[in-house]
Length: 304
Image (tube, rainbow, N blue to C red; front, side, top):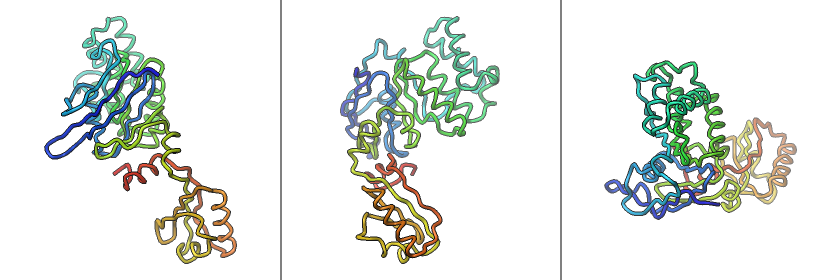
């Protein structure tokens, strides 16, 4: 696959804090590349370096673009709109900065307003919009000139569930003509959207690959989660045969089992439940997730 962007040994330090610690990766043309990590991991700093808004202390970013300025779109993490311009005026103003023709700009503005559910708010000032609508407008502004490479920094932050689905589907549609670099701390959303994923923490690159590649190479296992009405350490754990898997007590009456053979372990647990007449509140088999992998790598949850 053709590489559209290559980050080479990026390093950025603010005072005594290393925000980006010698990371390298490639982004392929026409893919959605999920750039993931918890708050403070270095995602936004890396995005600023890649988009030319911040100079690294060391390292390079190499683009495979005809015109870097006109071929890149950026939606920042924090909402940036002109409060006293209407939705339509903002898109036209942004398009004129990219020297778009008047006819093409008008059509493109209406296309984006419709795609992001803002057509009814076309002539409303941005300051009168809800936070979610402002977020959608912010994304539209980054896309007005149909860029070949789009940076979306936490694009779904603050969106209601309906808006999240709308934005997710539109981001998917961008693959036809654009490459998307998406930063988020929401692993579930990243799994739904991304072709490949890069996970960073404390400025360091932990892993890069497709979701399935990361899961296969992580060594992590599927999980059985169970909650009973009594003391699980006394009523269930001692009766399991041959301690079939590693487990973690999540409360006095619940535990999670990391398992390589889910069916054998589940059969074992169900047998004990029947034999000991244990009352169960909840029992589920959960496939390993990217967040499970992240916790195993860093020892902390992604949404910290």
